[in-house]
Length: 157
Image (tube, rainbow, N blue to C red; front, side):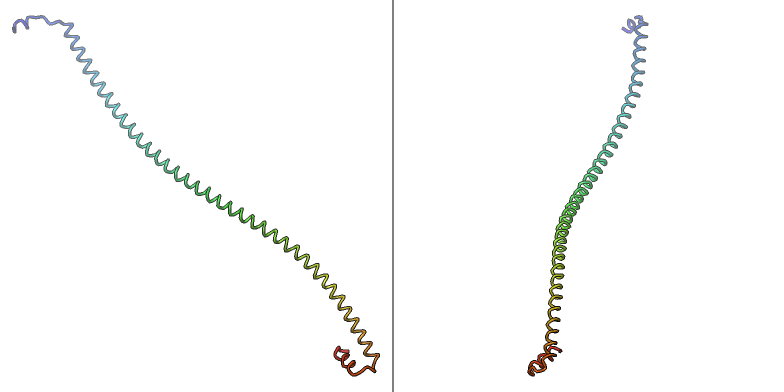
């Protein structure tokens, strides 16, 4: 059997084709292994970039939430201040109205004081006139009784 196998002629085309196919397979294996390594490296790099971006995104979301909370707090504070301003404006309006009423009352009282001063002045004139009349009576009637003189002295005449 050994002899038969050796006596057989090898087909050169088949041999060249087989060697060529094996060379192509070996070359493409090296090429695809290099390509696959590059793809795995690129995938790992992209995965790392994705994780970094996700971490940055989460950090940005957290900062946004903090800013939104700060905005909400500031808006609430603004509403409170506006309410305080409205209350103070209302108080100012009430005080201005009271001030106007007090000024009106003051004007009326000043007018009344002026009228009373005029009345007092008129009464003082009447008292002066009566005192003058009493003085004349006391001077002209020396014959009046002692009680009349006593009354004149009590009045300062």
